Image (cartoon, rainbow, N blue to C red):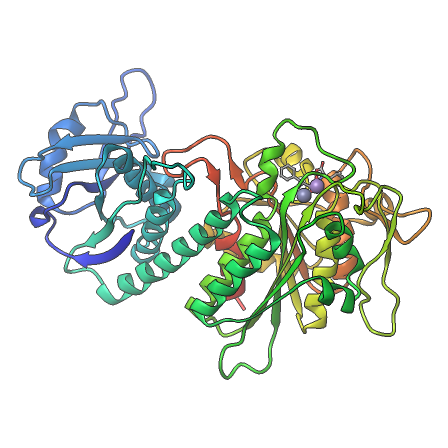
Length: 507
Ligand code: BES
Ligand code: MN
Ligand code: ZN
């Protein structure tokens, strides 16, 4: 889908569909309270075209509610689509992001291949943030997961144009919109990877896709496999990989902005299990097909690295994805096995891990990934992983989980969430959780029992992050959307890309 920002007189725009946003200004309560939708445009022709139908009371401007007018009087557009942002007080750039997605997803199944969106004008809405959000939302809305249909039903939109009045701050809106395009495309890059089935996207193929992307955006990259894992003594990562015919991939991307020689080095570490059968502790058949998305954390890091390379923040960033397939096999690791993780330093022994459940594999690959990130010089760490079913039990499918060993580092992430609009909820770490993963035979075990599963998994990673400021994102509940929403298709969500990016940009 092509994207463009232009400045024009709205009445003169010739398009299949002109979308305009509206808020619900109704404050009265009770049975006789009438809806009071107000369009967020000062354009007189657009307001006049919609006036009669808005006065009619059938449209409340609820969040992502739509109203379609054909051949609107006084406009050259063939259709006028009004998209609601919800209650006036709650309308934010995040509602604009969703509304732009709603407009695109309204058009797609109707065979409408272009959408022009009038950027909202309101005292309470930052114009640049709205322009950026509109670009993101339109791109995210354009994504559909049916890539392997032999005759694809919903092909991509041809063009999305955001328009603003000629009097608007063109430079500021232009920069913000261009940024939104990069972010939206990066999120979709992640979603396309997450969508791929396990037979198509093996660890090796994920490595190739990462390398192609890195090449395209001028990131330094290396993709290693079995030999390097042995050389680095990555016993935890290898233990997951050993049961698969598919070799592992250790993907390393480096963003090194010119002239930045000191200051923090941010390490982004992603879980890249291209398929998780559970291994010898095999998963039940029901829903096992979903485990193709067990590389969503790794894909989020790749999407974030893509956006970082294009937006060029002044901070060094290392991206690491630990990709493997978790399979049962004659060579697979077994419950009770003891593995030795990568040593934190050449003169130290690696920590030993008692494998209780081979299905708790994500923390194993991440353990070595975190240690390696530190060895490469990372001063601050963030990891993302579809780590536990327990995080969905704790937080529902509403918030993803975030853990951190350092308040100041988490504070920066919390600020990033205000820009990204993604929902993460901070979860606790603590010695009591750490006690649950002590092993009788070695240093730690890879599961902590029935209670607090997301927290004990996080404490497992904490053992390897050690004192380095670190954030852990458990996105298991939100990386895959089971039910479509007006602004996003069902399937891979691309969660965490935007928040990780903004966290990086805060340094
Ligand atoms: N990949 C799963 C977690 C998961 C569950 C992701 C549901 C997405 C949706 C992870 O590897 C796993 O199997 N975790 C186990 C841990 C347990 C064995 C301690 C789990 O959550 O059941
Ligand atoms: Mn598992
Ligand atoms: Zn897994």
